[in-house]
Length: 287
Length: 274
Image (cartoon, rainbow over all chains, first blue to last red; front, side, top):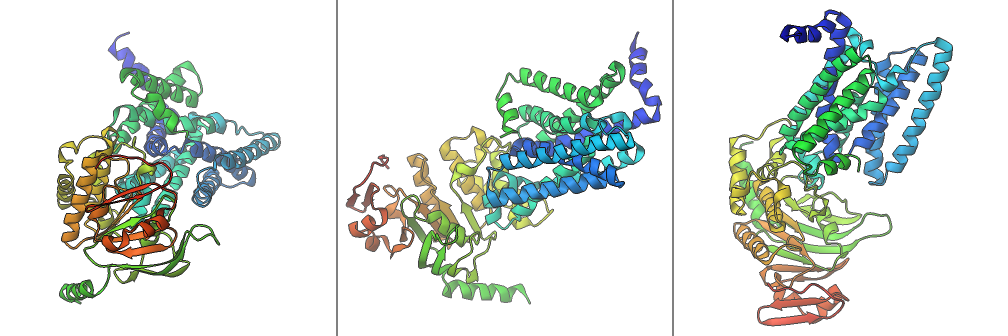
């Protein structure tokens, strides 16, 4: 098998419309997650991202049972949760991990119970949202992902300096007249939107990995924030691309394959830069 | 209205009005537990003011009130004749424990942040802003280090980066919270030489510190603070053993002022030469 054979292997799945759609969706999700993920890693928001994904799942289940759009349910739930977390952390201070953990695992449990009822009553499989099923992406899902990507990337680029100042040195930024509280909520809002459109592709359980791993990989090699974001997007997209083919040819779930590739990328890069605080960076995302 | 009229108004205000007027300020964080009680003082333009008091005496709280981040429970806080509110004319250099030193920003990036509040939403810093940031880095002697990450800086250099950011902001008023604690003696002297130069140019600076062994003689005015104003005035009037005792109580204090040395006894403190 020569060059042509390899190209043939890459092109073959793309002859089917739904597979091409799935590939584009996977790459977009990988890129968007990585972009927001840069701030998730720097500000230690991984736990909040995880909580948002679990709440979004319950939103999806409720939306399905109540008969309205999956996106409306998930978005409403995630945004409410994101703003709620923002409000609580500003009001109560930093020791909110326990509260977030209790409330959101409770909400997720409700989602699981409702899902069981849903399966019994409607015989549908909502399990794909737990581990993700990229092949189930429809045309309008792709539009939603693209729209979310525009919103997220556009906002992070347009408000680059405000978001940077407000998250690097919130006290001084606020003293100088920047709307720090609003900017912090905005980031949680972007995180909510990202989580919702990613849930279908990689699933509730693995959204967190797509938020954290590519950005942490980029943090190993990038010195400045813009470089970190660009590299994170490249790593995220690459993981999605390779993971997609792995999923297709090995017949394994797409979410698992994509995250596995992202993790291998991280380990490779960490080995190349010989540690240099690699684990400290990754762990810092969970503080 | 032409900008000429505004300029004239501003000039008139500048000559007649104190930069800071604090009148009967009582404030704090928790209801019923005021940190500051009935604080009253005024600062003239161009003054270098030391705010001295032990840890927990309310120095940082006073700064938060001056920045408009903490509303008065009673009394008024006026900056440039207006009720205090966050704005780019005040540069704030807080204590540095809150900073994440692993953040991927360079020395130049931090200096340029000083321009951000002046630019307004969405606008990107232009050539003039970059030049101002470089000028600010020159002032603090860090222009050669501009491409280094802040994680790679020494303690003294870290303090200077935030001074540069404050300078790039082109403020009228500087609020520095413990700028000389934990930095080496050359940096301490450097910081104060810079502040003295700024004040001669008509800027105003408030410096909060609990350690005045090295810096006492530098101030035009000194505010002795311990939850309330113990004394406020020129250093030669304020630095008396009785007043310092009342301010610092059990804390050790060694104060060199001119040829006088005042020792206030208490628990141990850090001794070092200037």
